[in-house]
Length: 290
Image (cartoon, rainbow, N blue to C red; front, side, top):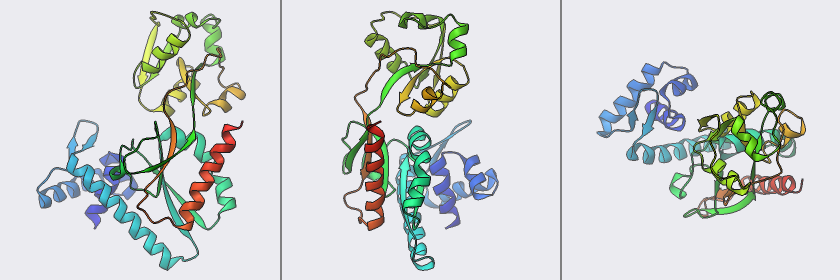
């Protein structure tokens, strides 16, 4: 059980070091326990790279089962040790969790003090086999194999920049002025390319470019004055309203995908899960009206 618990944390975090920090053991202990599991089961669970680990197909399949099993054990213990409280697990991505959900958690706690909302970091979900929580929020077109999906909110992209950086580099009057600015991409250039096309700008060669995978880090780079990023609205609305960032153009790119609330149709729909689901949908409806 100890080794399985270690595997579950390592698979969730995709880092032996972070797993060791969460479990309060050494990274060597984590690595040794994983190696023992691999030896016992005669299969490789992780591909070890220089600074990261990646789940194999066998590891990914096992992690889904183990995570669900530990959640079930935790829920069963809570039923007997604290029958007045119930837990609901919710998987979210980084920018939705930090920018949309976390600011609303205090309101949830006030409304439903007997429900513990347990947040998980979620990788992109492609089908029901990848979902190990009661509910999840993911980004897509609404088609998830074997899952129920309900649209939460649409987003738009528009350039955002710190005012002092814009002033230092000569201001931003037209989209073509962005050629003087470093651009910050999330993952690849596709979103900026689509925005420039919408703005009527043809070939574009910015002075410098940076690619960052994590959407929160993209935003932080813009807040630090590292360049111009495509802000994800409504998540950066507060930064613009508070003048931490400025939005120099009203040209907004609307992607084909949106955020959806996902649930497994086969899972038991307890009252608590329904409460959380209805609360999230209500919050999303209210935020869309702003």
